[in-house]
Image (cartoon, rainbow, N blue to C red; front, side):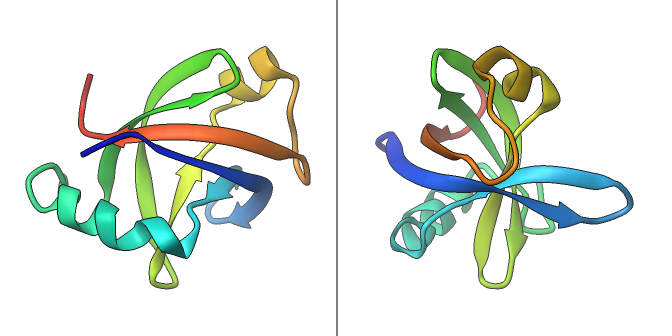
Length: 97
């Protein structure tokens, strides 16, 4: 799978504790689902390598309302100086490093 690049607003989704995420645009969901057929851990969780700014990190996309949410780790927020409500450019690829 090629790298996916998109712009997204950092949002909060409350689970057991508040977390910040970037929603993957609908136009990329089908490609991610296809790539996830061989990469998913199960439960719809998809491992990815993502980049925001100059910070590359590994995480997993979480399924939500027919799409995916990319968790924006606290370390990434601090390194890139971004937070809730800000727009970020994201690049990601499905799979492990």
